[in-house]
Structures are given as C-alpha cells and as structure tokens.
Image 1 (cartoon, rainbow, N blue to C red):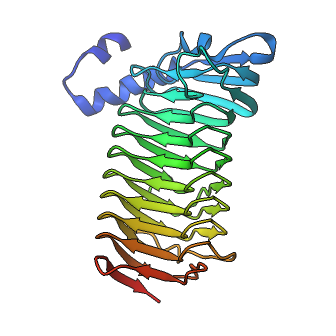
Image 2 (cartoon, rainbow, N blue to C red):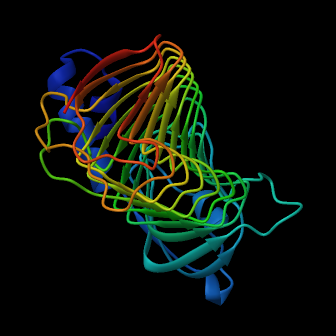
Length: 307
C-alpha cells in the first residue's frame, strides 16, 4: 500500500496521522523569491502547498495576501527583505493580509498600509523577528476570532495602535505559550495611540516586552477584554502605563508564569494603572508609575493591586 492510499484512510487515526505527516513533510518545498530581480511574493504564493517555505530577499513593492485555504506556509525574509505597500489600486489596503491558518512571517521589514500585518478570519499566525513600521492605523491588527503569536518584533510609528486585538481574538505577545518559560520580547514604541489595544472580548498574554513613548497608554484593555500582563517595561507613554475599563480585567500575575512584576523607569503621562467603569486589576504593582500617581481607580472597579 503506498503513502497516498494510507493517507486517504480514516481508521487507526493516530497511527495513520503520523504516516501522513511524514509524507507531507517529505514533500515540503522551499521557493526562493528575489524582489530586486523582478520576482514577486504573490506569484510564489500562487503555487505553494502546506508545509512550503518561501525565502524572500530584496525590496518588494507589493501587497501580500494569504487566502483562507492556505495552511502551514512560512514567509521568511531572512532579515534582508522589505515588503512595502504599493498604495492605491492594491488588492487590499493592508501590507500583509492573513486569512490562512498556521502562517509564519519572519525576518521581514513591513512598511505602510492601513495595517502593516492584518489577521482576519478566523486566522492563525506566528510573527517572529519582523520590523513593522509606518502603518496608517495599526502595525499589527488581529480580529474575527484569530490567534497570533507575536515574538521578537519591533512595531513602531503607526498612526494609531502598535498592536490592536479585537473581535474575540487571542494574542501571545512576547511568549510563545504560557507554559514555556523562555521569553521572546517585542519592542512597541512611538505609535500614535496605545501601544497595545485589547477589546471586544479578546484576550492576551503580554510578557517581557518594552512598551514606550506611545502617545496613548502603554496597554489598554477594555470592552469585556482580559489580559495577563507581567514583566514588561512600560515607559514614557502619553497616557497610563495600563488602562482597564468597561468590564475589562488585568492580571498582573498569572500561573504558570513567574516572571515578576511590570516596571516603569521613565514616568508615564497618566497613572501607573487606571481602572474605570467596572474593570478589575489583580496582582503586584511593581514600579508602574505616572504623573498622576501609581493608581487611579473609580468606585466601580475591583482593586486587588498588591503594593
């Protein structure tokens, strides 16, 4: 019996799944794209299969989209690739638009677009070692039930949010999954609004990042959202270090992690932690600070901050 016939059977699920995975891995291909030589990423993506890797180099003036049916594709810029949105007439306003599953984007400088990297779907992706700059709205936007791991990136100079999470989505920012101890810190800075915005029943783990010099708050959690926020350096933001509002919750400690509290070295423009309209905050204050004091809670909030 050949591998193809094995993979079409559904009995003996565990055994056959292993054989099918081996067969697919053996057939995975690597495709090279040199944008400086006139190649395009989108042309390469038209021929990829699950498990394939597209190695890119050069400056690519194009909009890149991953269709919903695309699964387990890696786009690797090898830290020598720029993808820049071409402007009007592009298929999508977003520079990299992901609707597929298990997509990996790494080692790429992403410039411009309404959003630099936009997940919608539900979609799922890992964003590792990228530089995302000068998006009109958000450097990275996640919505419609999407799941993303954001690791080792720099997200800066966006018009509004550095990272925006909405629509019942989930993000791991600085940590691959909570049970793995190693950190993969991001730098989120100089954005026009909040460094990280989480809303509309979404959730996030935010661990070990540097969030600084954003014009709004460092982290905003609101509209029934929830975040576990630990071991970040939250400095010199125009608003609060952390804001929780409208029935949102912020946990400043959370098992299984033990990374320690958040820190402020350069005072934020608002409070260290602000809570209003039915939110809650639980855990150690660390050295979070702002020009309006360490804490600013209204009477509707649950205050379980440990000094």
